[in-house]
Length: 126
Image (cartoon, rainbow, N blue to C red; front, side, top):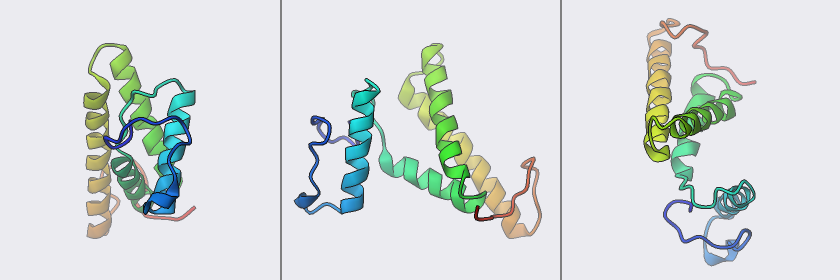
């Protein structure tokens, strides 16, 4: 399920329902991919993922966006698989860690120094 919407068959979302075509394409892709990965019942907050990816892209470098979201998904799945937390809880926790680290990097950039983030805090486009 995506953003609390009802589950449809993959590819069933049409852009002609007044929805932004880009948003419809993303939701259609997520639904289709989730179906083929056999995780139809996993809830995904697309807006939260895109927001965090955008923060990573603008705070670190653009390629940090997919890497950040991959790592959050990986650690969330690992936590669920090992019984440490359910997926929503693990995902929120991992996203919170990433958001906090990005906020510290932004603050360090605003202060004009590299901070203690362990790497270059300069925003760059790749």
